Length: 85
Image 1 (cartoon, rainbow, N blue to C red):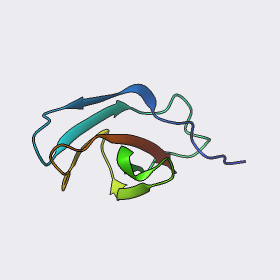
Image 2 (image 1 turned 180 degrees about the horizontal axis):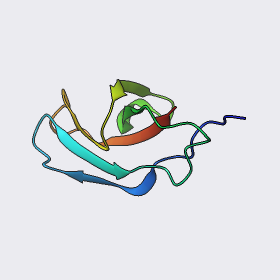
Image 3 (image 1 turned 60 degrees about the vertical axis):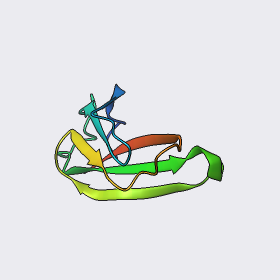
Image 4 (image 1 turned 135 degrees about the horizontal axis):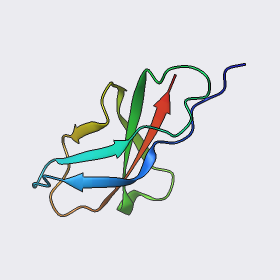
């Protein structure tokens, strides 16, 4: 039986922040659901757009770090990462 992996292990760290990008890093999930984690989905949400305004940034991240491009200066963002197997 293969299940979805647990969420990546936090905290989600944000570094190298500039006016239009930020680098996220995290640790792999503690349980891969019985199948190797093949990558990560990274999403962002502009907090001014409401609680359901999540936008996929990448669905093909192979590492536990990713630089989110195309951020707007002066905006506040939330980020989330999901493991896929």
